[in-house]
Amino acid sequence: MKTSGGGTSPTVTEKILAEGIEEYLGERLLSARPMGGGCIGEVYRVELEGGAPLVAKVDRKSASHLEREAYMLRYLGENSDLPVPQVFHGSETLLLMEYVEGSSHFSDGAERHAAELLAALHAISADAYGHERDTLIGSLDQPNLWTGGWIEFFREQRLLYLARVAHEAGRLPKGDLERIHRLAERLDDYLEEPERPSLVHGDVWSANVLAKGDSITAFLDPAIYHADPEVELAFISLFDSFGDAFFERYAEIRGIRDGFFEERRDLYNLYPLLVHVYFFGGGYLESVRTTLRRLGL
Image 1: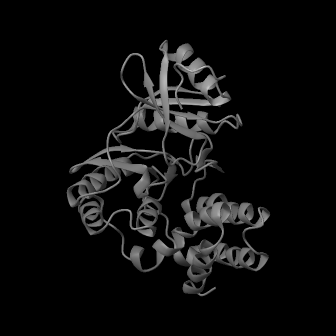
Image 2 (image 1 turned 120 degrees about the vertical axis):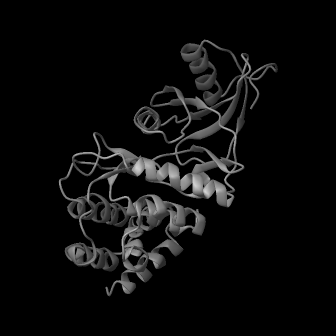
């Protein structure tokens, strides 16, 4: 998409970008090139008259998703040392942020750096589980009502909430919903209360992390809340986003409790699997069923 020259009328997206960049940054838009990825809105690499490229996201639905993404990036930028893109503007329809160089291919050194960064993030605590406001996982609402106990929080605001949402969307059959309810009643048999809540990124998979050489340059598209940090480790393992170098370095810094890899990892991954069932259906439903069978349900 070019915005300079030509005699055609600008599209709605072009107008939102050009007018927003001029209003909030005081610069003129030269061009915008679509980028891959992103569950929320349309994503562009934007070239400005001033020279430095930006990333722009446009959401014409005005569903407050971009505003919440901007909030989460700013929260991490202000309250942690996790590298995230700087946000220049965030509203319901337009998000303007720093363009960060890097790719989603990780050397062992980059994996170790990721472990160090996430271990530091997980050292940031709170008085309860949840967050000061609801956030997002992809483009799906993620409720974060402050809760004193982790098991109760995971039961009500992650497992049962997402199972209900997926069922109401017609993606999770009633029989599977009932099996998840039976699991929820027995969570105390599988989980233990962590020592304290930890701030988590919430959506760490390879496409949401950028690296150059042995250094991580940015974590993207967060889904933050305060949790048992094992939920972060579980999701990382679900799609093999990082390998042994990551887990070995993380364990050196914070340790990984006994039983995580053998049992709790699969249980925690029911949450992202249910998210994927909601968005994509298909084979993810069978992955949910396999996990439930593994847990004796």
